[in-house]
Every structure is written in C-alpha cells, then in structure tokens.
Image 1: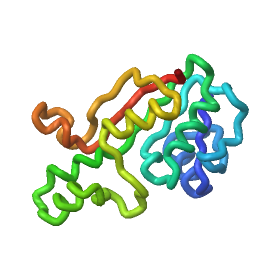
Image 2: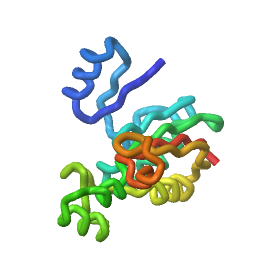
Image 3: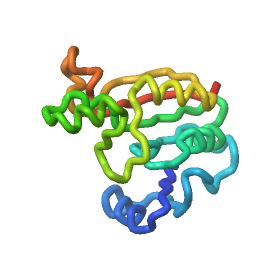
Amino acid sequence: MAVGVDRDPAILAAGRREVGPFRAVCGDALLLPFRSGGFDWALCNQVVEHVETPAALLLEARRVLRPKGRLLLTTPNRRAHLATRRPRRFVEALLGRARSDPTHVREFTPREIAALLRETGFVLEHREAVGRNAKVPFLRPFAGGVLLVARPA
C-alpha cells in the first residue's frame, strides 16, 4: 500500500483528486510518523532541494526503509543551468547560485547528490539523467534532472 506524505493538506487533497484514494498523512519529511524499517520503497520526488538539511531528509528515509528497501530520489540537476543561453544564468550556475525554482534551498549536481546518499548510509544502485537534454549524449551532463535508486548500506 502506498502512503503519501506532505506538510500541506491542500497538496494531499490534490493528489487524491489526481490519482484517486490513497493513504495520505500530513507530516514533516524530516520527522516521518512511521516506525523504523516499515517500508520497501521510499520515493523522494523533487523534495531534497527544498529542505535546509538534505542529509536529515535522507537519514529519515533510510530509517523507515527495511534493510533490503530502496529509495527512489529525483532532483533537478544544477548543471542544467550551464546549458542556458542567458549569460547571467550561466554565471550564476558557475558560482553554484542558480536555482530553477525560487523555493529551492540548494540544487545538486548528479555527483553531489550521489555523494550525499553515500554519506547518509546508502549504496547507489542506479543513476540516470532525466528531463531536458537527457537523450542527447554530449548534453547529458546538463540534463534537467537526475533519478537515483539507492539501498541502505
């Protein structure tokens, strides 16, 4: 059974309208209201870039996973801003200050998010470029996002 978690009840209601009934819990992703080791999968879809303490988010995801569980994480690729035609965005990207959304606290490169997963006790099993530029080999490093699958170490 799938369980959706968000701190905004309106988001959970919109999810129910979009996909139908599912168990929805209003809560904080940094302090999940679930017992340890209770889930086979955790999906962290475009969340890690929104939190002040991304390591705490990943540690909490690891806590609720079973030993053979998996985390599927997606996040924007900070390098995508380097493929822009706008000089100001290019400079911001070089300095690590570019954001694809003003609500993002921090965006990661694929290498940075993979390193953070390892630092928080995960073993990376799969990483792939997704979104804009993902299908073009020489532009793949600048793809719009990254998808990773990891398991607890």
